[in-house]
Image 1 (cartoon, rainbow, N blue to C red):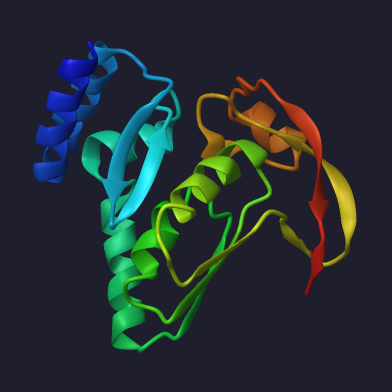
Image 2 (cartoon, helix red, strand yellow):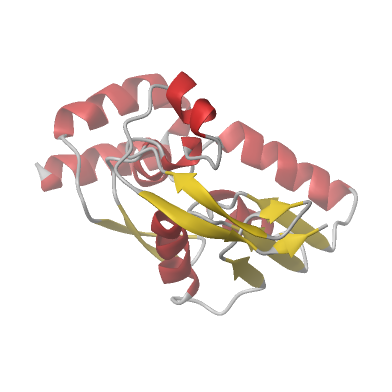
Length: 179
């Protein structure tokens, strides 16, 4: 199935407008614990069981319209520093790094943060990743990870429960930066 997955991904990356066709095909290919690819020069090892990483693998990026809009606004206003709060695996940050002098990303989730760190280690960049969340106070909080969509993970259990939590991990994470 890996060859079929790679073929579907090649079509999807060349034709992201076919997202509604590509993603169901991707689901038929099955989920891969480890799918490698290069995005904007960053070497990624992605887990296609995760929604965001799956779209990165099959379409080249997650939320192309949103990322394009943010990058276009940053170009227009000549943004020098971009903050990526909730950086996940770096989908937005790697594209912002092309249009901003510096990108500062915050990601308290250890699982997605490790994917992001792996990509950052593959290329010199203007991205700084901090492995904690932002808050109005410094404290350690329990973190709830959604195993099917790391982007839905939260420090607030009720957010996860409302989103049909399929989590695997709970841990304490540092809310070390105060504003």
